[in-house]
Length: 595
Image (cartoon, rainbow, N blue to C red; front, side, top):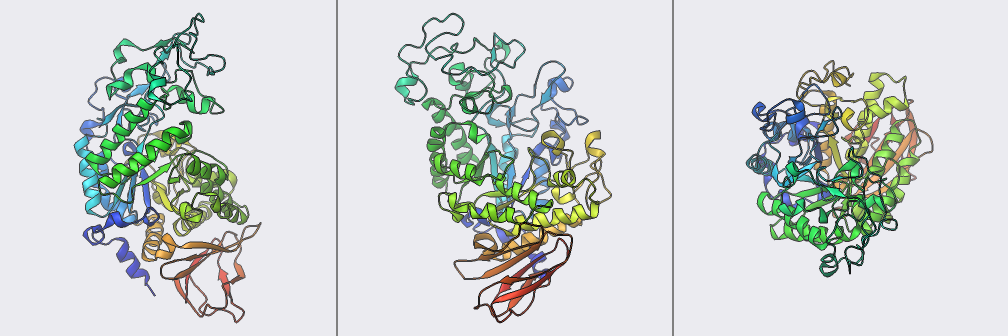
């Protein structure tokens, strides 16, 4: 039996003890820690304004407002690698670090690009975060510890530079190809782009005949921003769809401007080649270990069918055999089929498991445990079935969709803070032991709950000056976000570190096949086995999602002779009929090695 003490020692082992051979680890071997650099820690106050002068509308910096830069940077992240590694994370997913348009929005409605998704220069680190040298130092320091670094990348759009004459205040509605074909100028109906056969013929010869952009709207580029984008080819409007704002449905889902951002014409082979060149260079020069792909469902499949293999080949040539690519296919429902569709059609090795989030949220908020069965029952939909599902990053909180604690409170308005803490712990136990790649969102380990989604879930771990954040009740502590929250003794931090060590110590919890043993249409029992195909090791996981104690029998099979407790109080001997009697406290969890 692996003792709890030895597991904790493993969790905080010196960096050199785990550095050798880190690239041999498979994607499912990782525990990911996701953060926004601006909201993690401020290691260099000198770059808070990104080298710009003026007030927040010019610099983007105002630490009192949640929609502006707060000062976090890459040096702050590098200084806190101990904190992340001691939590048990083995990989860091960093929100986009590329140079952004500092501020966008109409007068009085300005917000800043602190999140990183409004890129103007795809070749440079945003000065608010530091320099390319700072990022190289971060990657090197992580690698020295045996930790991987995943970049968050965008190919769907750039910052909002292109405007349309018809809508001087923005907000142009989407204009379809049927109503506004490429071959007619929108303003007067004159014939343009002779010989262009549409974007479905994705050849260089065809796109060489697309020379005018005013088929849907009259394109306007402000002179001051005419050369703001890097590489330079991105400044030519011919490489964008220019059809107005997306409705997120139908044709506009891949051709419309996402919240007004300039939507790249990813059907054009030159755009494909350009993006392969941009991101291949980050692999070549920095040796990053994977990409999270933003807004992936808003790009046509043919782009991904070229881009993904090119990135994997580029990484392999760099000696990065297990380069992980996982795509954002946003959803709030339990829809694994949608995720599987994009792995099959687009060719993504994995997608972020939004269906897992829904299933866990429902399960720990009072629904039956059959929600988890429903999720895992559909794993065969993925190209390689459960093998693909094991590489899906699983999460319970995020910068876009908000924190789990907020949604549990919303579902259970009368819940006490102590019960909420136990439900959040149970959700982390599910994520850290079930199939998939556990993905922790910075702040959850310090009891952050948030006020909702997007900006309302992007609190900084260093001391915040945002009143809307600082009035939040955190879990497991009397602190607020007005203080720095890097507490190694926070109950959630210690709990996550303990389970992370358990996961790393047992291949069955990382690479094991999964067999659901018991579930119910009411809160209570959920039991599953993880079985390592290499060694045959089987670990039984039993969860109680109810507020009452659980006493139940779980079928194991007649070959089971004894059980060794790995977490919690496990029965030691199976019943003669091949099952075990388990007893769990409310919202409890056990992990038992089957002998």
